[in-house]
Image 1 (cartoon, helix red, strand yellow):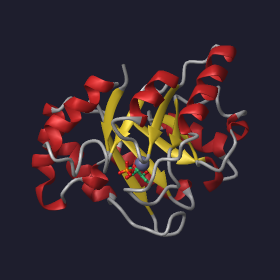
Image 2 (tube, protein in one colour; image 1 turned 90 degrees about the vertical axis):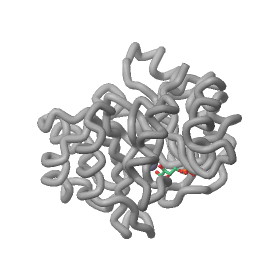
Image 3 (cartoon, helix red, strand yellow; image 1 turned 120 degrees about the vertical axis):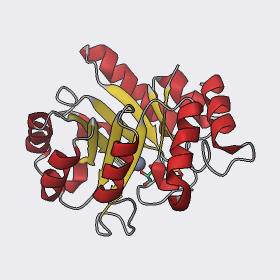
Length: 219
Ligand code: DX5
Ligand code: ZN
């Protein structure tokens, strides 16, 4: 049984509050906020101001902020002000991952490491014991609507194996390209939280609420 964590990157900006309501009725237990700087990834997404408005509208749902930025340290002030429940950052975006993890903890934010599809699990080695979660990307970061990479569930399974072997308690989130078929495969492999975007909660013929429920019934 995995948790549904919809990405508001896919919501209709002109109907954001209605979309959030529909996601909650559909069973969302967390909200995923994608922050891009146009440098780490060649795109922009939600802003901290928009994230703050979402937090004010919906304080009851944990906010999961995904930083796709060149220098995560440059955003600490905004993170302190927003105070999301958890934040993931890409391990190749800073040489000082452990220091950034400490900074997040000092702000009372649960830290997570994001892993790109081309990165071997080994790059997580020294941080696994320090993070609360790992965000396994199912696509290259930066854009919604890309095709899910087929090796992802296997990578999730291997990470879940490491977790078992080392007796660690981090949770595993999968982000990017998740759909009604590969989502259950990721959950079966050990994923605890699935980011629902273009193929799960949004753009489905049965609408946000029903497609979210349909997804949850499958995972
Ligand atoms: C991709 C972002 C994802 C994305 C979800 O860089 O991190 O959260 O919006 O992708 P889709 O919508 O394709 O599932
Ligand atoms: Zn994301």
